[in-house]
Image 1 (cartoon, rainbow, N blue to C red):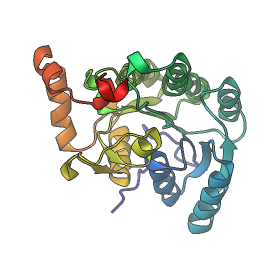
Image 2 (tube, one colour):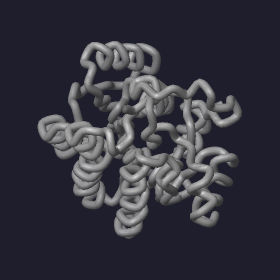
Image 3 (cartoon, rainbow, N blue to C red):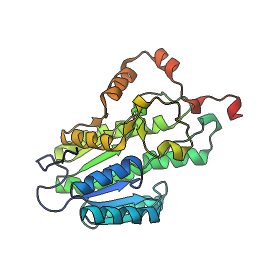
Length: 278
């Protein structure tokens, strides 16, 4: 059962009036779960993703089911144009009270076999877009003294557990950035939080071509459960949210385990350059 986020002095929205949320990567996975949950709670939505047709269908479904207003922005946030059009919406129109930076990618290629183009695209989407949109949102939120930003990071941000993959490095930036900016935004009544889930059942791995068939069932989280815990942690004013006790324990291990032990248990095949990659 969903727990509504009620307005209080620390709420990302004012106590009166309409609430708007802008969600990137909104048509799938955690982004879609955020859109569904927030629409059910009465938030109006700006949905951002690359696929215009899929965006239109999602917007129509959420409006029809929950009676909320929806706007769509078909944009590739790994490009300057896509970021600029989304920044413009954050600066204009009905004020956005909650920004969810969810769009992101991983690569099914070890760094030594990767291409500059793929690695730059990962950095532009996972890092550059998060920086630009967070800055655009905070400019207006700090002026109004309310609002919140959730930057979707990963448990992988706490350690180099995927040898040869630059995904965890990009998410380490997101987590550290969110904690730092969250501290500076707090005196203005604005919250910034890094959401660091573990393995979550979405289209993420399939789109990257990553075979997860050997991952034990107990390690998987559901996207709606991740969103529920994220909103509870945001309501509590946390700077970092790690959904599920199992991944809280994992993060504690990543932070405190000896480096040699972490090197031995890191088993992600994207970093293994063997015959299959030659």
